[in-house]
Image (tube, rainbow, N blue to C red; front, side):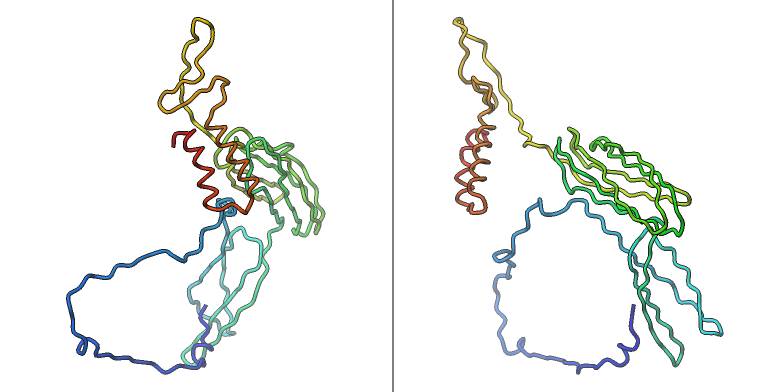
Length: 285
């Protein structure tokens, strides 16, 4: 919102105009066109695990066209607010031919029933966690509410349907046990609260991940010989099957993970290259 007082009374700096005659005193010669080069000192990106996926932040930005004031210098401007709980800054500018002014103030916006949920950022298949649901009754009267939490096809919610009574001004926290199913994708936990003249819907999204790396191998076992002993190894299309049935690629990956855990944060690029060589040889990268 523009501030007319700051615009009219702020100090002004002198304008600067610069001229040069380099084009007249420096001889123009034919040469190669300069090319831009990138990189060298840019900071590396953070770990992908540190960035929260599917972040959704609600912002409120409303604008109303100019309206005329009445004889008392007042005007009524209706604003339709979205489903928002928090503090908003209300600013207005008034002007006439010879007069102007501006003002602003903060207002608190809250629903009759404030519902805020806190869920895990990520889960692996088989993990267990809890969803905390805060409910604050600000309706001015006692109320009875029906709370439903649905995890869809990815998340199992235990005791997801409950009934609750809250007195005016009371606040409570409900805990819902969660467990991740053996499915991967974008999980959407839907939260619904119903009561007298109250209807609140909330949703939380996060991505369940596999509990172990997904690997694809190909191979074919040869038939047993006349003595009943099978060949130790057989290869086809780059895949390998050992006699004991353990994938060499999986073994190499497991050894690399154990070595990385022992090194911790002291690992270097040379260590990573040295540990990747056996994995490339076993997995046929």
